[in-house]
Length: 138
Image (cartoon, rainbow, N blue to C red; front, side, top):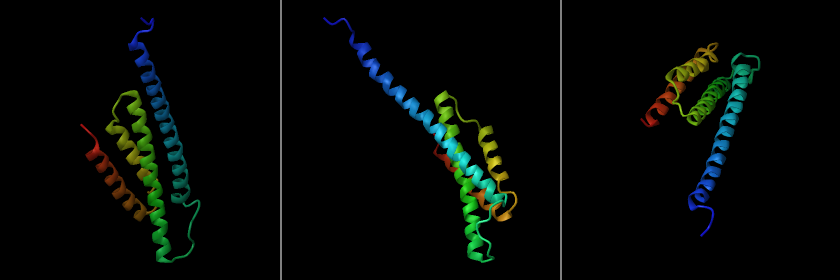
């Protein structure tokens, strides 16, 4: 008869696996927050008109400029939402509607200088929040 019980042997690999998954989840929180911050910095540079991409008055280039600005804001929103969601999942708490609203408002503030960027960002953010609401399990 062995001195080590079978239950303790089975629980050790499970704990190691859970520990590895938890480390990966925290790493995911940090990486998505870092990339979200990077996209926030890019958004501030572009939407604050500190850096301009195109100097021509060509309608195609203006449309491309608006699309790039909107996409940067939406990618920022998605990355921060993923980071917050993963963190809340690790702590065992649900994401509050207040946090989602605050992030929504913060994303809209980035686009207040241009009405077209603001309107397209608003539509995109509403689509993202609606999608996450419909996909989320109750």
